[in-house]
Length: 182
Image (cartoon, rainbow, N blue to C red; front, side, top):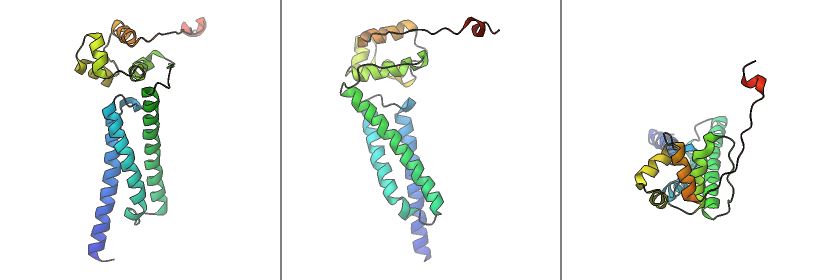
């Protein structure tokens, strides 16, 4: 292979590796917690899916100099990320379409994500929910971006109330010997 062709192949390889890394980083940044929280993140994720598909098509051509095992690993990594993004899009679409009526949670740690999903299922934008709560949209965006870190229990209840969400739950107690450390 001539030097010119080698340089061109190396450039395509670097471009593909860079694109795969950038797509993954971009997808991670726009879907904190593995969830799409708004229409902008949905559009960015849809673009990332398209770019991942294109990277898969180009992978064998641009990475031909790598071993078949390495290409298989690269393909597997891209396909895994693509599956994750498709799942996030599917969940967002189901929420937006009103196909989800009950949101389950196993612990209080899941409450912030459930509240965000409830907002989406209610068909409300961040701006609309912020208006119901009497706060600026930017404050609600910060709450959601931080998964309501620092929000009081009263604030979380106000969000649930503004969404018209009802909570039903139970607390399962540890047995007495385990709880006391005996």
